[in-house]
Image 1 (cartoon, each protein chain N blue to C red):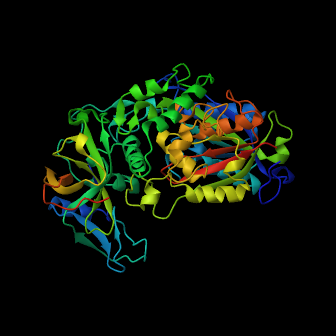
Image 2 (spheres, rainbow over the protein chains, first blue to last red):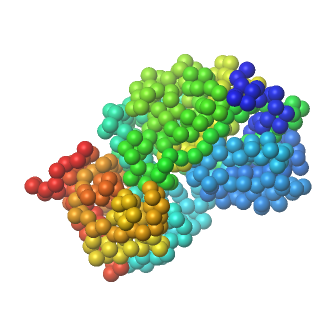
Image 3 (cartoon, each protein chain N blue to C red):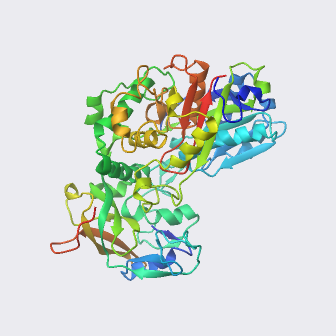
Length: 423
Length: 139
């Protein structure tokens, strides 16, 4: 058994553990038209609670992370929770906050604020604006008609700090993450010689994992390295399949106490350590900030999170059996591998190129569900779901005897991470 | 089009007059971009706009080959770059490169500002390669 600095998890009565996972179907962008994103959120919560062997009436806490459209207070009301005792939202943006939301749920449980906290995320991109098309030009899934906005550009008051920041990027054609993070990889390639084939090992490898996963959106689309290299460029050096999916779906996980978990339907998965945060001056990450020091710019921005995570979990990279590493872009996985210490600075490309990430024979089977590149893009909460399945022995790419799993949230923004363990 | 707040409006007003500026803390001299209300180094709220020469080099870039907005289809391919600006204390800004073949862009390329008036209230600083005899290439 692995024990953190505070001793074995199972020895602490209120130690927070993961006891349930659930999801709706995952489809391509716009594939779910018969019900709302909000309804999917409710369904995912219900599925995760049922998986745990709990009743909805036992849920007393709800949490998610920044940019969630599905307010916990309405979720609580519409699910008829007897009493909502804990609700929170991590500030970490986009995909950076999934692991932090689990950590918040764990803190709520361990401190006695709530008994059963559900972390959820629903993301129906077909029902809202498409990422990368910029704000304000799509309503209810439909692109606003041309001429619907003034032809003469003028300054207007920003409604948020983020909007004032992206004013320094969008007018110059930096419409969204595929462009912003392509620039990060370009810098990484310039400094370290990272190659397209090395990014391709991430994209092709996770596609192979997805082929075994019936939930995966790209499960029926096998891809060779030749296929990958032959796909069109989106924003150099990113090809189409370096970029994650755009899709519809929702998932959720349930956190409760070790004491309560002893009587539930599934084996409890321990939370050996959590960490969250960002580097000094990193801001929203390279999406809006290109001015940080060179070593931070060409990185996942997760070195501080990684150092604190390993210290809190009482394990290091060599102790990890399987990993779920946030993959909004294949190349950013390479940067996360560096920041979390699986290889040296600038060595993420050769590390992936060696086949290390492939199940079953790689040194660090990674994104065994197919990740955001090939299973689904649910802002990385599905990576937590897969981490739980691995430690229960229920993955469709099961790592034999897996006892530890690293889960990371988005690279290139303020982020968070977890180490999960098997009792 | 650009949205502004109390901290950033001065930068856009200068741009409208074709002046490329960077915010500099008058307490410790550190620059910051985008502009903000407090110096992250010394926490001074006093700052000034430093006018720059408008030259710099490409720190990193991407050649965009997909139209993320339908209106951009006829601009493809175009280059978005992070420009490290001369005399700006290491500050970088995002812009796009014009008057060049996107195949010729590289890290370190020396560039200079070229203004495009979008409306009476808005001018955008774009960049093009420095002609022969211009600024030294960076790294």
